[in-house]
Length: 233
Ligand SMILES: *Cc1c(COP(=O)(O)O)cnc(C)c1O
Image (cartoon, rainbow, N blue to C red; front, side, top):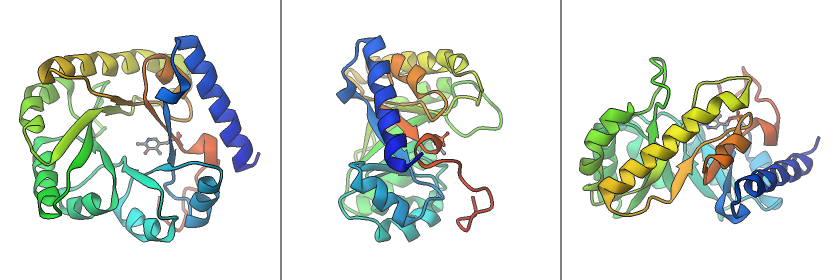
């Protein structure tokens, strides 16, 4: 299958999931996860009309983004270390993976220095997995007011990577949980939060049925990632 075929099939599946859920297909953004893919592949995807791309490593993004078309929008979706916040603020339009108050405070400082406002999502460890990054839900709710008080950050919603399962339906409770957490945050904020970033190649249709506004898709679009590739992923 070509990239164009993969994209057409994903778009069709997004439309069908929206139809089942009674949602407008325009309310779901497709974020192309470009990790391990070279700039030529990003360019080919951009020529097919994709504009939103994701990376999960700062080093890789720093090398790749300058070689890609200018008009693209980039979101950071990986674990962010505080010593990489300056690069993250300069390279990305949104950081989807903020999972602690110290990280938010460091982003605030770097955004201030860059005279920017940084849109962010809070990444939630929805299944409470010990091995995963992401806020524990209770802790996020406790720190939410402090995070929204940071003047250079704009919280746009929540992101999650539920446990991998070959049975997509099993991810549904985790997506639902993320949606409920967003409602709790909206109450604390007193305003709507537009984004739920959830759903990957194996489970994006379920995520859309549960309210995803951004689906992050790599494999279904670009094919399997090579494990020992030059990018070191
Ligand atoms: C790699 C990655 C994806 C895409 O995963 P696929 O299963 O290849 O679609 C989505 N989100 C994050 C945070 C990732 O690291």
